[in-house]
Image (cartoon, rainbow, N blue to C red; front, side):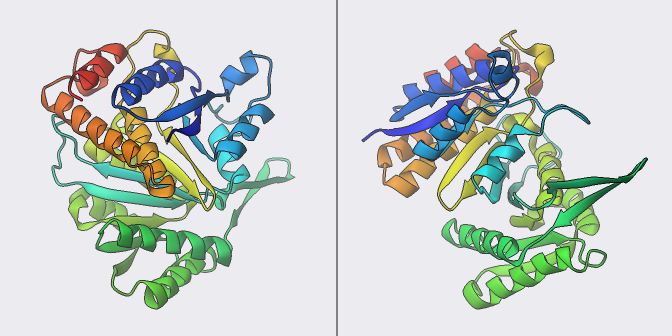
Length: 339
């Protein structure tokens, strides 16, 4: 049985790391038929919209996508492709697993955290208005439905993955209504549906201090949108950066997996980018297909890839961002050799 999924190479280094990733998935025996579509600057350069309707139609049809990085202008220009996709497909739970990898030296060697971020509300709802000349207001949006469903998703994830604790990072001491709502919904979901999972909440500034002191005290983190964006990058820094962290966005009827780092236009086309983050996201996609469609061959392929890139890193086969010497294709070759 072969699934179909959309592949969006993205901008900058996206096409290079996408090609390397697909080579690895194919060599591992993944049974996925890829439907390629464009988004971001690449789509605009082809004379289309930044998020073409053909891309949206393909995701609606196949319900699963793997996406390379897309450029987002800072302070001007079009709205983030990532944000648009999450809103259009109601992908309300963003998930980033963060763990130490072999062969990558960091100040910590016991990091194993999953960051779960509410993905459709908060300040990223994009409700901004110019009140008068020189005065802008941004509205933070929180709904009971949104807070409850992401809290339930986080606790269910913890239960099904054998995790022990969920910690909510918040600022409910100041934002008593919006952050207070997430806190209340999480507490209710915990008490009524998942009492066996340990639960705690902590104010986010103190939580960040605790994180850089001893990250091993955390397991599954639940955060609203903006906090989750910031803290997930902080956690990535504990284990080597965004180049070694996968990402996924889940809804009730589909998922988009992505490299969470930028498009790095300064090194695009040079075959030096690290494809590991997108490979790891591809592993998450294969496991998702196994979980939702019963495709055990894809779970086996995912496990082979994970073992192979761990072994490659252990053997010192690393790209330049990780103090190695391999280029994009060479790293993919090193992983394939160890499958």
